[in-house]
Length: 570
Image 1 (tube, rainbow, N blue to C red):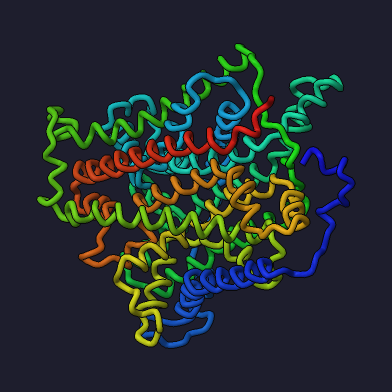
Image 2 (cartoon, rainbow, N blue to C red):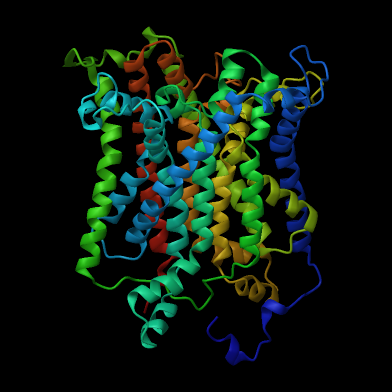
C-alpha cells in the first residue's frame, strides 16, 4: 500500500471497472441473503401486523384494536415509563462503557483480558439473573436492604440497575470495537502540532468514535424498551410496554393486543434506522492500508485512575453474579445458610431437567457458527462490494428491526408464520432449526452493528486495489479484511453463543418437550417458586458460557498473533 503512489497507479478507489464474474456472484449472494431476512424476519413481522388487525376469533377488525389501546391510560403510562427508564439507563451506561472501552484500548492498564472478561460477564447470564440477584441483595429479605433506607428496590430503581447490568456489555462491545480501530499517525501528527491531551480527545478520539457512540446508545435504549425479564421480577407496580405485551399474551392470551404493542415498540427501531443511515452517510474511514495500530504510552496517573474506575464497575458486576451463585448453593435463604447441591438436581423440579441444558448447548453452537458467518458475509458484501441497490436497502432496513422487536412478539410471529399448515416451511416448526433461526434473527442487530462498525473503518482502497489487480473479492476478504476484523468477528461469535444460551423470550413459544431450553427452565422454575433451582440453572448457564468465552478468547489470542502482527508499529 505504501508503494502505490510511487508506482504511478491512478487512484484505485475511483476505478469503476465492468462488473466481473465474482462481483455478479456477490450480487447474487446479496439477493439470497436479503431473501433469507425477508423469510425469517420480515415475514413473521408481517404476520404480527395481520394479527394486530384481527380480534380473538380471527375476524378482521381493522384499526379497532389500535384505537382502543390508544385511549388506555395504562398503555400511555407504560409507554412513558419505558422511555423514561430507557433514557435513564442509557445516561448511566454510556459514559461508563465509554470510559471502560477507553481503558481497554487507549491505556496501558494492567490485566486488560481480566477486566474485559469481567465487564462482559453479564452477557453470560439470563436476563432474569440480575433481577433475582437484586432481590437477594436489596429485597425484603436482602442482605443489603438497609443501604437503601426507605427506598424500595421494587420499581424504577431496581429496573434501571438491572437493565444497566444487562446492557453494559452490549455497549462496551460496540465502543471497544470503535476505539480499537485508531490510526496512531493522527495522534502523532496532532502531538507534533502542539495539541494537548484534551484537544486530541475532543478532536480525534470522540469524532472518530461518534458512530460507535450513537450505535451503542441506540442498542442500550432499544434493549431496555424491549426487555421484559427485569421488570417482571423486580418492577413492582411499574409497568412498561414490553411487560404489558407479555401480560397480554401470557396472562390474557390476547394475541391481538400483544401484537399491537409489539408494533408500537417498532417506533424506536424506525428512528434508529434513520439515525444510522444519516450517520453512516457522513462517516469516513479511519483506518487505511497505511494505518498504524495505536499503542498507548506510559502514563501512571491515567492508568491508576482508569484502573480504579474499572475495578469499581467490575466489583458491582461480580457482586450480582456471585449473589446468584451463592443463592443456588444455600439451602434456604436467609434462614438456613448451610451449603448444598440439592438445587442442581433439576430432574426433581419442573423445567426440563438436564435435557434442557443439553438442548441449550446445541442451540448456542449452531447460532454462533451459523449466525456469525451470515452476519459477516452480509456486512462485507454491503460495505465492500458493489451490492445491488434494492436488496442492499432491504438488508439495511431489516438489520436494525430485531433490536426493537420484543423476543416474545417475534416468537409469536414465528408461530403465526411457520405453524400455518399452508406454509412450505411448516416442516421446520417444532425443531431445533426454527429455534436457531429465531435466535439469530432476534440478536442480529448487535452483531450487524459490531461487524459493520469494524468494516466501515477500513479504507475502501484495499478492495479497490484488489479489483485493480484482478483479484476476486473473496481473496481480499480472506487475506486482508477478515484478519483485520477478526477480533470483532470473534466478539460476535462469543456474543451469539452466549445469546443462544441465555435467550428466553424469542423461543418461549417455539420449544417442544424435546427442545426445551435451560433459559426457559429458569423462567419456569422462577414462576413456580423454585427460585433457588432457577438460580442454580442460571449459574450453570453462566459456567458453560464462561468456559466457551475463555476458549474463544484463547483462539482469538492465537489468531491475532498470526494475523495482526503487520499492524504493529515497527
